[in-house]
Image (cartoon, rainbow, N blue to C red; front, top):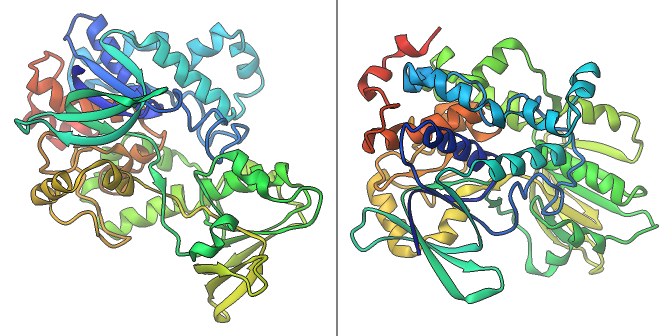
Length: 452
């Protein structure tokens, strides 16, 4: 059993950013914060290409200089000591990582091209190897998360790799859930399960698709998951005919100064005071409903690829038992159906579904009693995420940064502001622990101090 201030499930980009900040604060002698990270596969598992749909060869959608400390404006959360914290983070930057690999000059002289997911995953693993002050990473799978007897701490039951019958227990003052979650449910009949894949299916599962013959594959979704599936399947089965179903016409990502600034610092546009439709529209057109332009260039002349504007509804087994029948709603034809050999559900990930699987009934009830209806909320429900990227009203605090995009700013759901994400999660904890980096919270909530 271990006890720590921060308990994190998943050793990905968000965990690396928080670990880097904890390591720095402890190294500077500003506090003594303890942090435990539980990882079931390997650090940066979603990026390295050995787990799930990504092959690791997809281009990163952001420049890697938006690393674990970006945007390096910690003085806005931590006052005068914030600059010292940012300076102490420099040994953990992407530049330092590239220098150690003797690749920095080549990368700069080449015009700072996009890097691959695998490269960024190796960087995150490198950070987690070096962010050691107060940080411990455990190998194991979290099987259940509950509350301590006093109700003041989270506790996670962890099945160690190779010893599932002898679980460990780790507790934390706060709980941070990172990672993409599990795939969103897509309606399909049990009989067709073997012909339906998901955005978190392991790559070896797709080898069931016959090789060396033409097959018809439908990909459902219009974001990064669909694009990763497209790139991987095109390399895996070059002769396959791929059809992408998106609710709207596919758009490419355009990054202007204003868009990037909103991702890095949502307070610049007073994000949390914008109406929900404005926020939802920004996220849709700048993050969720777009394809990366560089990948679109790679598939521009692919004559075995087509797009259908429509909303997929259900998948059933084809009449001959040898295919999948995809039912969808087309703007021009209404509800219709099309036969495919396989269907890939890339409609995205669901963090709340992951939580439902980790929390026993009593904990789920306790969470809803504190924050309101949550578990059976409709698809466009705005999850009540507070400024610390926590579920509002829940004690002990439960931080879910991946759900903070709509309420607190689009960069928190991806890699757009990892350094700010870490600050937001840590600030209320540092105040409780009376660490001197945390200024008076009421003062820091003054928008005049947060805006340029």
